Image (cartoon, rainbow, N blue to C red; front, top):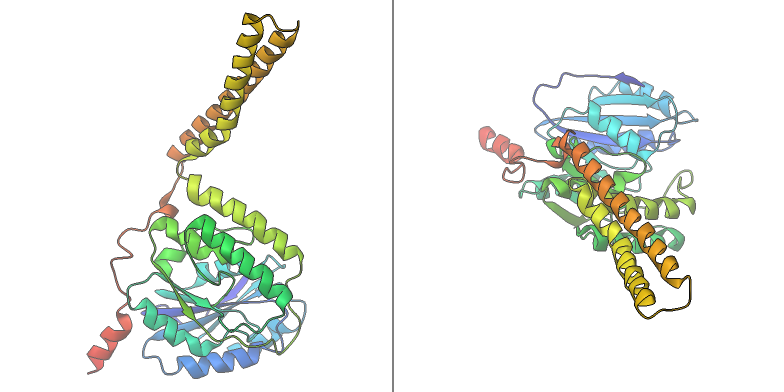
Length: 332
């Protein structure tokens, strides 16, 4: 991975992270719009573009613009690692107290960034965009709505649009989260493990101007597998024994039922062989239960020896992002 920096990090307040993949036609326009919005800010800001292994001239355009834009920093991944990896790379290299993410295809509107920052200033840790008037084909909108409902229902963090990339985070909240695979859409749910306060705001959404969507039908299966994985992480990462006990309950019930049948077979002299059959089945079920309990105990020992600092967020939610308003007061 190659990275370039353009300015020191003294007093950096806002970092805007944008993952790119084959966006040579849109990246220059995106930077123009970001400059138009950010030039009115009275605090330090930076834009971090992460080229996720583009095969077109995206990186060449970024290198050219970097010469005339001191706020621009760029990271180039050697291969296409996925949107989650690109975002995490941007988080790792960001220096701001607040991190804003958005897509590089111009469908998210940079003009919504000040609105997200204002909502953060009310005391929230994450503000997620909601593409209420979404300009995408129904084949993308319908599966997205189903997935959003499932994620909200299973994680307990109710949002209309988990898939919207336009989000604002407190840096000390999002940097503590370990993510992999395609889990960028679950950042709000993962952050809820740390006690983060999450809000949602309607944002503008535009039709794609250049290129084609990078998502296909295979994305649906990835999302549903990620929903299963994220629920395991949220519910049982800090207490794995509970999860294995739940998995062991069917074995316990089956063992009890087979044991009862075995006793009945012995007591009432059922057909020869039935008592032995039920006894063996009960023993195998008990072994399954013991296996689940053993794995749960090993999980608890592993957790006890592991660093779970990413699941704790000390005093973050009790502090407001009042840097902007404080600077206005100083100016007066």
